[in-house]
Image (cartoon, rainbow, N blue to C red):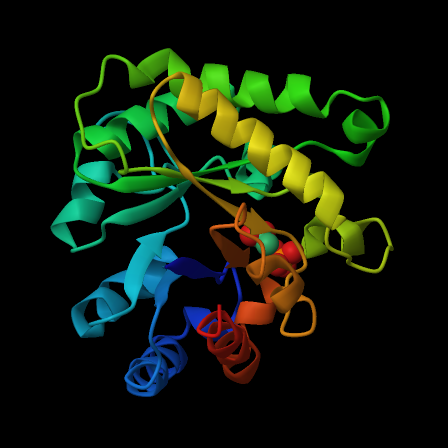
Length: 259
Ligand code: PGA
């Protein structure tokens, strides 16, 4: 079963409780007719609790967490235990926007990853290279480092079911927000590059005896989603800007149910 995730980022409209709940309730209603798709929404903290109370089929997740439970951490987001107590079981870790804007490095990814797992959450760790790194032939090196430092460094000490985390491969150059920031038209990565990265990532985890699901993210929309969904090596999609609009997100879910 493929996994389709919305990443609502800091979208202003979807930080309004009424709008966010309308979206969710509408989705829950329409999902009754949809089979074979797992749907998650990574919402902003301000609406997460309200969504979590009303969600049935849709899994509500957080976009980040802080690794400590208490202390002098002004501006920290939210702790793993707090998320769990709100009924939130999913969390994004190391999204490239948190890496870029808030200085989350691989070490912090490892701390967040560890705390999430220890507190019963399923982290979805986001990794991906920049265009420059890709052009310099450093994709493998960058991905391996992100995985080794951000996940494998703590994985062996953790005791948990083997499927309790996943990876989102999101090459930075394909993420719409970064493309727009550079004045470029957002475009997903090429399928051959996604295939290479997904197989490379899966292989690293298989060698460690941890089979993981790998989702693709970066400028996915209803027009290009089928190309990705038809491929076995893509276990699902992490959809950013195209998930802000109900019809566009639901169209991707409908397409997914055909595969
Ligand atoms: P995008 O974002 O779909 O707008 O490119 C994806 C993401 O950042 O998760």
